[in-house]
Image: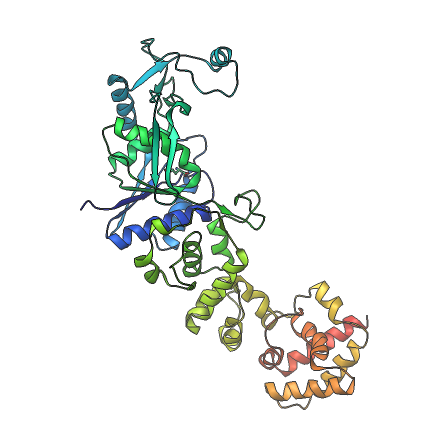
Length: 457
Ligand code: GLU
């Protein structure tokens, strides 16, 4: 049996997109389950749009989601630009075999001949025997070209609708559609799984591969990823950079799990599944051809689940980048378990615990306005007095506030609001009485006094 060789071939022209990550993971799963190869090929031939930092970004983003050379199925990275001699050779061979020809038609000439801006190339230079110009591939006039796609099924493209497409510019530089096919052939790729936007390339490549003496690969064109408005996820509209999710405190494991479910599922209703369980089940044939909705809320819920599954110590470690180095680790540890059950993303840790470490809480004005309604000062003052003598434990702190509430005709929830804002600066956060307990008597009282002063101007 021939070895399964898949590839992931990103162009380093921007931040690494979640859709690219999904394509990479699908390929990675195929390589891993078959003990084949996953080739990373950086398609860096568009010198005007490529930047080295994008290449580094791709490599580090892949590494983050577990795609790297520590696994022997990984091969590369290769750089497409290094293969230009092979691309040129392929063009020369197609010319020599009569499968391609030179063309010197300008756009204006073509439009003048066909009478339309939109018509494809009319084949004018096919038999002119030119020896220079752009190079066009001679497409068949009749019949159909079939792209037999694992995801989309058998797609037929009538050949009379295919123009003789350009494979090299007048200056001899090969075009992407050709370079991509030549690299796949030289790298002995067996399966091409990539975004659906490449389907038009697949038709041309289905013709190019045999012309270059190779059997076309197995194709799998992956569904488009859309946002809540069912529009294609785009970097102008949506948060698409994997790096941004990482910075916000998404765990790689959660991200991987979620991305794998964009167009694929294990066939039962399981959703939270570790990578190792998904790999043996994954099949390109099972990928759905309809658009996949990238649901940020669901992703966040997944992430929360993965955060809760971390050993407490690991959770604390993962929070460190979001905390100030000067903040006392022991104090943080006291509230960490409560935070762990509540976070959707790790970066939220900061707003949950900063009140413990700052001299003054960060007052969020809408929270303040909402909590400090008429009568709030009475509650603050009464609780402040109670804190003089109360036993310093969660239960007693709570009972004390319940009693203050009763005296003012308020349920606990209502009585909590001004206290919470005075202590933490916000209306939502970790359980209040634990927070007060960890903060300590003196500091808690100082905060209530400060809030009163602020309220009463
Ligand atoms: N370089 C192409 C892209 O980034 C991928 C082409 C392919 O996978 O064949 O869209």
